[in-house]
Amino acid sequence: MYYYCYMDLAVISSSPRGPLKAQAPELLSLLEAYLSAQDVKQNSRENYRRTLRQFFAWIAATGRDLSGLSLPDTIAYKEHLLSSGKSALTVASYITSLRSFYGWAEANKLYPNITRGLKLPKRKQQFRKQPLSTDQSRALLSEPEGLSLRDYAIINLLLRTGLRTVEIIRANVEDITYKSGKRVLLVQGKGREERDNFVILTDKAYRPLDNYLRSRGRVSSKEPLFTSVSNNSRGGRLTTRTISQIAKTGLRSIGLDSREFTAHSLRHTTAVNILRAGGLLEDAQAVLRHANPATTQIYTATIKEEQRLKTAAEELIDSLY
Picture 1 (cartoon, rainbow, N blue to C red):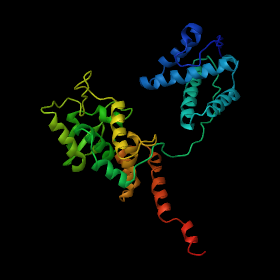
Picture 2 (picture 1 turned 60 degrees about the vertical axis):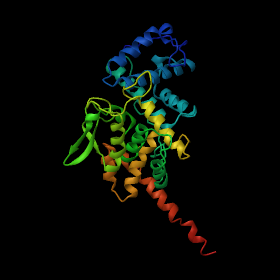
Picture 3 (picture 1 turned 120 degrees about the vertical axis):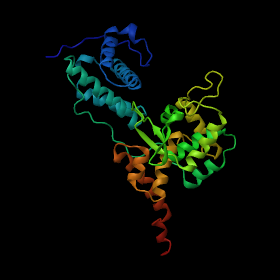
Picture 4 (picture 1 turned 90 degrees about the horizontal axis):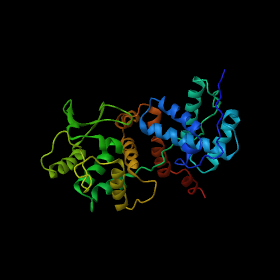
């Protein structure tokens, strides 16, 4: 038996920051109860809050009642999200939040789980950011004009190791160490609590980093690997936004200024370049530290496309007529 909650949703704002607390305290309490029961990181909790508020706003805007919803309503909501111009990946995030909410609501006998049978939108397996070509990679590392020792070291590290921006900012000086005689950087990966993985620092990856560290003078092993030089946070840890801006500056210096080329493009480039150089898919997976090999599989599409362009079958026709 379910004990349904009846709430007035007619005045909920469509903005994630709308006057939800004043307009629908019961709904806010329900949402916060759900969020407090989720054993997830804070950024995931905030994503649930934001996406579920959008769902409640849609209910209000369409004159629906929360207690009377069924699977067709959730399908209509998914179609609304897709028609609004959101990508399949973004819509999948909204639907995942909805599934989680209704799973919790059913377990607590508040509402039945009406999301059973609600499928995630299909999306093509490809990355949204473009990798650099070999020539572009070479240009990025050979033209450091306008880049400080720190910024060049960051770009070089991103391009040669495939580190994420968050992994760069988490790194400390002491994380540079050795394993079986090879210099490595210990990595605290996305969603991880410990530095339980590593990337190998080749001489070409390490040299600019060493130059930068020497320029800082005497540093403590506990200090961040890269530090801020701004007046407000001098000597402190960088933010992911700063890392992204540094990468973007470097990319712009070689004429790559579109939205398809960002700091994450450098991670993609690492994987693609491993394959270009004759490495195996398993090699790229190990460097990028993907738990699922299917995630790494998408990089083969770039290699196949390059081969397709080099040996275009259409050009064979020109030899006939």
